[in-house]
Length: 293
Image (cartoon, rainbow, N blue to C red; front, side, top):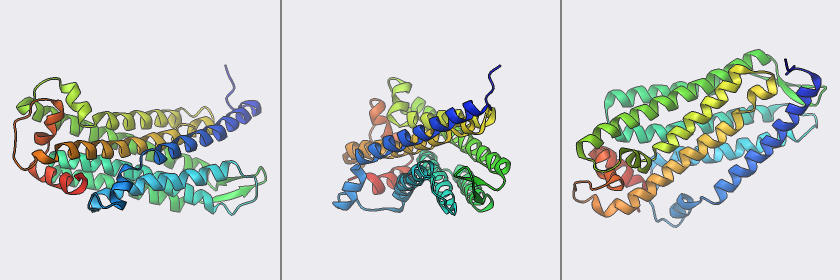
């Protein structure tokens, strides 16, 4: 049986972890630089700024700050007070919280139901509370090997696993709620392929976020060693935030295309037109005021 905790294996996995961190950071910043559509629209005042876009920008740039801290930490061997580790933990995890908020706002707009909205809001607060508690509780210290480690590694690892599992479950709930509601509405008014309709509504982004967090949670639970246990956390965070941001931009483009049809209700004729009736009137008003040109 392979010894995952041998010195050679640990050293090899540590090198892989550092290289992977650099790769994910480069990929994420490329994604940001090539997808500045909403930023340009708000700067040029093509869109009116609304609070609903705050999670988009917070998640997008919290992730950028967290990844910069990650790259700085894994590529440095100079003695540190480990404060950068706290910044890293907070910004990376909060970016995932904001990504879930983007998905949550989409789900709320589809349902516009008080009970569903209340449950989702409670879950969002619970998600944020876990991240803040994890950041406060788990302090780090410098060790002679030239890295920062948690004062209680077992507790820090357990909290990370709980947060990732919570994110996975939350994303799954949002995905199921959205697909269920869209399927019901589609049966009532839709024509054509249900799969095409769900793709048009951005459900693929919900699925990507869920799968990425499920893989990361699987590695955390498996934990052949510490390095391999956490190796899925960074890519899961990156892909979750990217998926959430793409979902928002996808919806913005869809609403911009359909903005002229909001003045009068129409019967849908295909998956792309399904947006007009997939949301309640309140949901359409929210997204029109936020994203429509």
